[in-house]
Length: 426
Image (cartoon, rainbow, N blue to C red; front, side, top):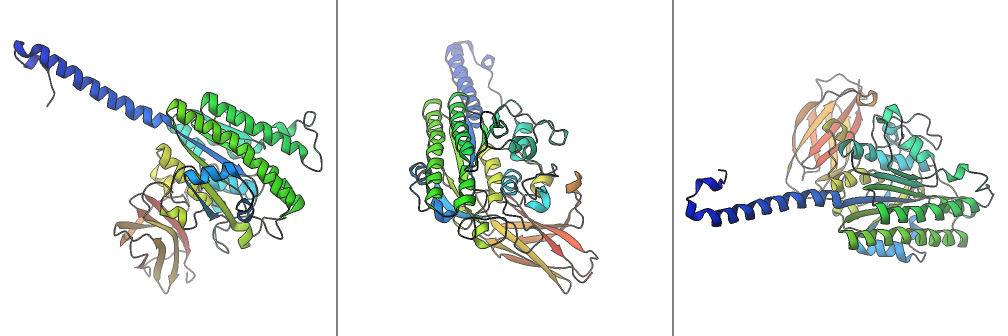
């Protein structure tokens, strides 16, 4: 029932008017606080290229340690399902795009550093954010121009003409100012400028979603492997990270903003720290650190594709249901009910398994027998039934179905898991 001051006798007018004003101010304050809280949340993603977990853990990195102490650190992984349909090369641009899209290479289609035919139907987190909040700001600071022009696809019709509000990149193509040398000193100098510019603009302009990429450590790994030279490069990357971290702390202290900072790498290294690209455990192993504490998934071997849904959760980015069903990651924020879905078909029976987190909640299992999403269309899903997520497995009779491949999706209260199964008997 609405409160109307004119409904009361005249003798109550002044008191009721005061009450009305108090109620109005309370409602207005709550409304403004909700909007302010949403807009005060910011995300900064930092990729320090090609640093193995064993190296970041042994080198003196006070700024990195400060971030991890505030939130957490974990060894993580990338590379998709080894030997399976989603196996993903442990190559730089491939790793970046897995982070940006929350999917493995079988979907985003960035197979190497040439970035020839990205499948832009799998949107980056930057596109989702800008489509949902067109007035808010996105930024990139990068020692590689292709990150903006090809992976994010700025200005392309295929990405909805995505526009970055702030960017600082492309210095590596300026061979007059930065002549290329065999020791990658020019990359060292560019990294310093990129980190400083990122810190300055975070401090001054506070973009809402920012990606920072620094390259020099990868160059040192390729040249020297696990070595004193690599250690020096990691310490310099930590110094640069410190500039960014100080800018974030300044914003939080002086502007009442709340930041999610995630620092990670794009691949591990094999053969003494020199090489990557294959599927060895050393190449697939990465790491993550964050300034805020994550859920239990973070302590149980998270994946690079988990970063996308984590950012979406933190920034409250709405992801359409059919898009969310394509994501290969699980949010590290909020409650988690399941992860690591797998499945097989054996003698007409579909058997699926997932990592359960001991929560007796209902889930739903869906399947589609096509893959129209990759062409920008919708897949038609069939509901197979409900499951108890605490069980960690389920079986379904598949004898009536005549198909070669099917995409199984497990729906949980907070998201979706998907896995392609092959019917070898058909």
